[in-house]
Image (spheres, helix red, strand yellow):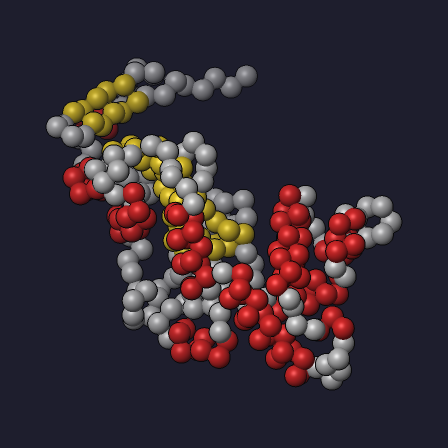
Length: 276
């Protein structure tokens, strides 16, 4: 993966040099494998220092407020240049690939990353599927706005995660309405879950969901077709809920259960909150 990124990044560096009036500038040279590793390492260190929202110039300061390893490893100008030139695909074929995929810029690398996630880890018995918003305000055709999230704007990702270790085992980026082709898939909750659970199908694991994913149909499907047990919250407007569970006036702290052969539904009346 790094080798591919280095190849495409150097292609962009060559393109940048051709457009520059003075292409012999030192900071515009092509990157080596070791320098590219160094660049990625500095990004990791910035993350460890919680510097994602910090101005890069602050990390290179020499007045004692910067981080020494940044300025002793690479010049700020070189870091800016590499950051601007990083590419994940062959730019010469991108336009053709964009006709069938909104994620053409990163599709190959992203698929390789997901495969590596699955090869490197054996998940525990408890799993969960949920959405997360990767904060991003740049130009992107499938950037979404979710007011309930702290970042509000970003790229939405549906992820299959190990509950015990928080390891991401499978993930899928919401790429908007895809053009006709192999990537034009349904974004309904049932279909998203069906795709995400494929790597652990028939493994007898246990799932939890929130109410966007949960449905009676999905629970039975996972149990019957994938041998996966699941639990989730259900919106009260779902047709599968019996009228007896929708009645108000239940005693606070009480629970009412409904049983089928393979499904259990419970209605819990929470305790009233006493505000002081």
